[in-house]
Image (cartoon, rainbow, N blue to C red; front, side):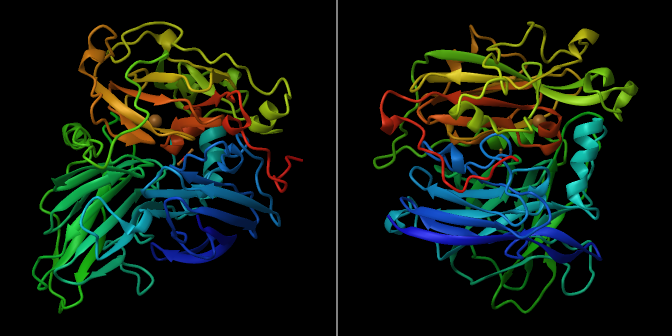
Length: 547
Ligand code: C2O
Ligand code: CU
């Protein structure tokens, strides 16, 4: 085990994009932020110093954080924010993950610019595929001309329309549409001919699932979310917001062309406004003498749900002589059924001025509860120190009423959700199945649902309403993909299983930030086991206080 120390300075830095300059929040002045490269088994200490004028917290997306929720990062869930001038020390133990995960700010909309890759190399650099010549992150992002820190003020409080970005980006650059000199244009990835490269693709976009394709080359998917997959060849990817994909590319094409990576949204929500632009980056051979840009032959259309699901169904865990899947429950102790809806709430309920349709505000919910984040004390502290009145331990195991979740004409009384800070409590080591059911309440969408503190196995999914008598018979209990973020298909369901063996307080939410802002979030508490080794570790000394 190596102990590595990283210092991250959060500060405001000038960047020019879309032909305009503005200051954005960065780590160490970089956008996207620095890549953290570690080996499996390493422990890393990150000293996060806040030199900006905004509060900040950092989250390690896809890192299980065994027994250490203190370092998980979501604001007012596991910590109070690091205030300007303060420092907080995160401890990261890389025990289970291998491949690509990432880090991002977890307060307000800071993650729009405060994010970066985490590369977890295998012990002794032994990959389950021929060792790549080199690897590099491809981070999908979004750029706003305006100050992103002002966006949640609109969305969260008034419940108004989502604020659309002005462009998608790859590694921080918007692509060929915006030629504003040197600082602009496309990210360029330089490769040698006749080599094998590992692309670590991260969807850090705030509000969209994304399609991605590469001109001229085959892509072989070998991993997702910090776990290996059975390799498969594909011409395009669908990466939900929050997911990562590890992709091998052989550079065996002619140097007479310049090859484009192209990415656009996958958004099949009827009537939703969103950014329709396509972002591009360049894959260029060192021995190339220029040549014309080749666009990928096939990039699915924005509303191509069949293409999205055809890709997703190919993800399978790598199971062979040396790779087994551990902790996949064959039987479960508990089955939970969670609905994910976009709702409307009355303004009198919100007690704020509304900017949503019909004089109401947009909201979003899990089992019809729109999560309310505490603001005075974080949930972990309240739980650990037995402070009462901060949350209720009565998150329902089912939605309040059964209805035709994915039907067309839903009764008006199903439109609204209630507010609450309610958590689900799981006993240590229970095996859990959660059916994530999308609904068509106000609008149906593919919700990328992300779990902190655990990975899960995606054992099944389908369109329409989950049928508890029929659907479990079709589960994949042989090689389901191990993930931390899964897209619940539009007007469909997804079933996941995991063992609750990581004591702590863990957030679960839609990784589309507009839905998260509107309340499509909930919290799971996994209780301590009977021994100190199966309990939450004591809090770090420099934990920021809320006052
Ligand atoms: Cu990637 Cu709670 O987030
Ligand atoms: Cu969502």
